[in-house]
Length: 109
Image (cartoon, rainbow, N blue to C red; front, side, top):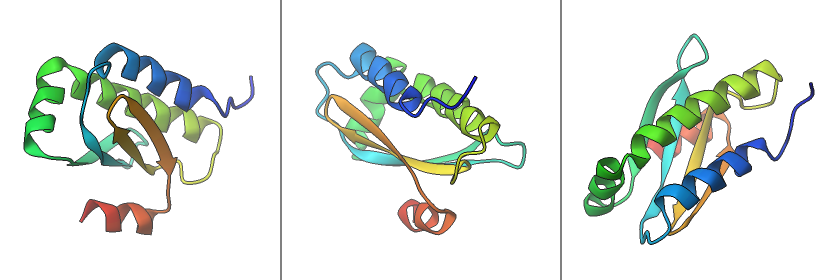
């Protein structure tokens, strides 16, 4: 089975519809794979109040699980920049960008 270029966004949309229907959060999450290609690190960049509510609701846990799956999926299909990216949160919407290691590192600072 080939790579589905819409897989990432469909899964993010599902997660957003479950957790972000009334969200006002805006910011981003920079994430990196570890040496085994699994989620190793994530840096959250949004205000503390929104971070706490997203964490308490279970959103953070499920986003981390999803990011792990997306990293594995991209690596299996040998996609570019498969080991790092950024998820942008804009209220009720999520979007992922797969970026270079340099871009991810700059965003995580």
